[in-house]
Amino acid sequence: MPSGLSELDQLFGGGIDTGTSTLFIGPAGCGKSTVALRYAVSSAIRGEKAVIFTFDEAFATLIERSRGLGMDPKPVLENGTLEIQQVDPAELAPGQFVARVRQMVDQDHLRVLVIDSMNGFLNAMPHEKFLAMQLHELLSYLGQQGVATILTLAQHGFIGHMQSPVDVSYLADSVLLFRYFEHGGEIRQALSVIKKRSGPHERAIRELKLGHGQISVGEPLRQFEGVLTGVPNFLGEGVLKEAAPVG
Image (tube, rainbow, N blue to C red; front, side, top):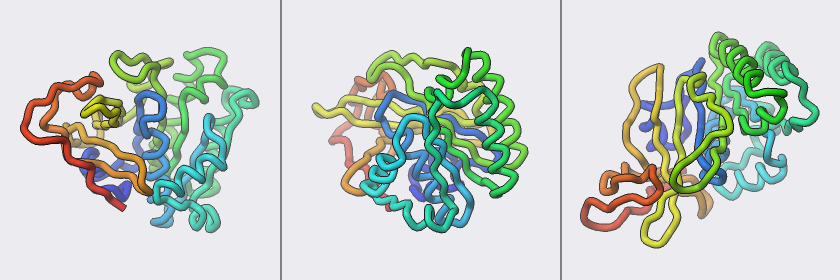
C-alpha cells in the first residue's frame, strides 16, 4: 500500500503491507496524523475504501489541515471511498468500537483503517489491560481480512527521553518513529521505520517537512548522529539539504 511519497515508501521497503498493522509513534504535533491521512487519501484515490476514526481532532480541522498540505479529501469523501468518523471516547463503551469496525469491514469491503489516536481510544477503556485485549482482537480480525491498519500514539515529551501512556508496540507489525530534532537554530522533524515483521525495510532516518502546501520527505540524514535524541552531532561537510518536495 503506497503512500504516494516515494521516499516514505522506501522507508517501508516499498510501502505498508496489506493485512498488517502499523504504529505511528512520537511526540504531539510531529506529523503522525498527517502522514496517516496521506495513506488514507492515497488509498481512496486508488478506489480502495479507507476509514479514519479520529478521537482527538475535529472533522473540520482535519479537512482544513489536509487541504493546506495538498490533500483535498473532498472528491473521495463525496464518492464514498474515504470516510472520516469523529469518535467521543466518553460515549464509547468497551467493545462498541470493535463491533463498529467489524461491521464496516463486512459491509464496505474496508481496505485501510486509521485510528487516530490510541490515546483517545485508551480514554474509552476502564483499564489499560482492556485496551490490549480489545486491540489484539481487532488487529487479528483486520489482518485476516487483509485490511491495512494504521494506529497513532502520542508520547509524552518533545525532545530527549520519551514516555508512552501505554505500550502497544508489541502488537503492531510495523513501527514508524517520529522525532523532533534541533539543527541550525530550528526545530525539525525526522522519521524512521524501526520495526517491520512482514519484510525488509530501510534503516535510514529521514527528515519530514510539513508546510508550503505539501508533505516532503528528504534524503537519509547520514551527516548526523544522534537525531533520535533530539540534539544530533554534525559529522559531515555542508549543510542539511531541504527535503525534496513530493506531490
